[in-house]
Amino acid sequence: MSDLKPSEIVTELDKYIIGQHRAKRSVAIALRNRWRRRQLAPELGEEIAPKNIILIGPTGVGKTEISRRLSKLTDSPFNKVEASKFTEVGYVGRDVESMVRDLVEITVNTMKLREQEAVKDKARRIAEERLLDLLLPKSRESHGNRDENAEGSSVELVTPERTSASSTREKLRGMLRKGKLDDRYVDLDVSDRSMPMVEIFSNAGMEELGVNFKDMFSNLMPKNTKRRKVKVSEAMDLLAQEEAQNLVDMDKVVKESIEKVEQSGIIFLDEIDKIVGKGSGGGGHGPDVSREGVQRDLLPLVEGSTVTTKYGPVKTDHVLFIAAGAFHAIKPSDMIPELQGRFPIRVELDSLSREDFIKILTEPRNALTLQYEALLKTEGVEIVFKEDAVETIAQYAQEVNENTENIGARRLHTILECLLEDILFDAPDMKEKRVVIDRGYVEDKLQDIKSDEDLSRYIL
Image (cartoon, rainbow, N blue to C red; front, side, top):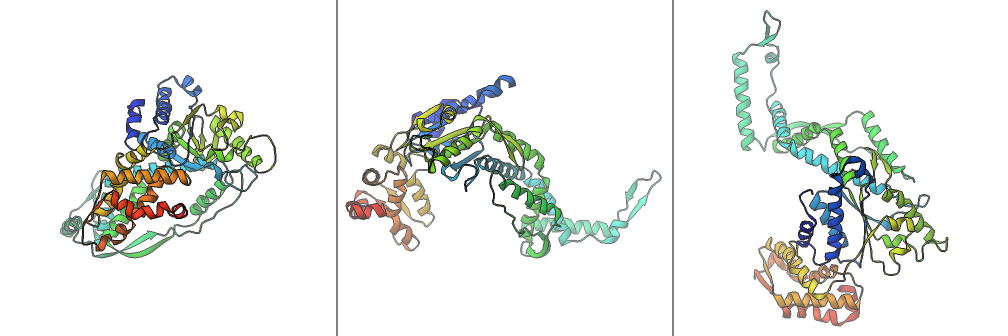
């Protein structure tokens, strides 16, 4: 992240997301400000709060994608949550603090997997030795063949039997590495993880108590293992996995994960407009009471507080919150004033035009046309999208969005699935391995559905 300037962040986002330049600029500045804060003296750096962002725009214009790509680009812990899932404490629903706990859980698991990957080679070497012990058990005599010299240190006597056992072990090692023993079976003690789950349903952070009970019981109960007869190749993978877990220092992983969440975590709050009542704070009755309660519960997290997790306390002072919503019926100014002040940056995203749809279909690295070409190539079928076909698909997407619900770029997924359904179904048995999609093909498949408004509402 330290190497990326705001302009470079925008350039990277441009590879996957079409348009929305203002939104990209805003998130790039917010991200760079994090790096700038870390360059300051700790006393001043602690005082600088993150500049949280509200992305305003209809569904399918790239709000979630911008945030997700941003986290991947900077390797930041990321958690996307739907604000409408949360309710005020006392109502039936999720506690807002669970979004921070989920973020910590995701980060710990990610860091643990990385650490296991880093010690993979060492774990495999240890697993190899354990597997050779299973294939060639050591004789008892070789363990007892020791002599004491004058100084009292133990000297091992090399006997002919021990030398031959050592050479046999090396031969077995060579055969194991070449895969000649893969089809042989060995008896292996495998830990049985089918432990009954203990879950507790309750409010105000008590869900975390359920997890702690599980950990406590798992430590009290004896390790449950069962003996299985497995192939050598599978045994190698199981042993390597077990050794990798043993080599990972979990205390270090947890410490680094918490620091990473606190310094560079991103929480994406989708559908924030759903927890804002029209003229919020007015009536004081009905569902708006709960909605305003969620905003008030959310406020300490966004302002900066300490959340208790099973890995220890986590501060949210410098977690970046990116909120998003369509804001059709209500405005950001309908949020409670305290929460408005914690989201100083508001960016309106543009609705997608026909030209945008054409670019989305062809330009990004993960463009939809490229995805379908790659999928069908696995069946040996080459599919070619002509320029006029792409233009027609974009035009259909725009018209259907205007006549029915506007779901943005997601409409392209629906139209392409409908367009390519026959090819996707028949691909394994097709004699003709090259299919050209042109304007005529698109109109032939979709014209009747599009012209019937009732039908297009259901299918496109």
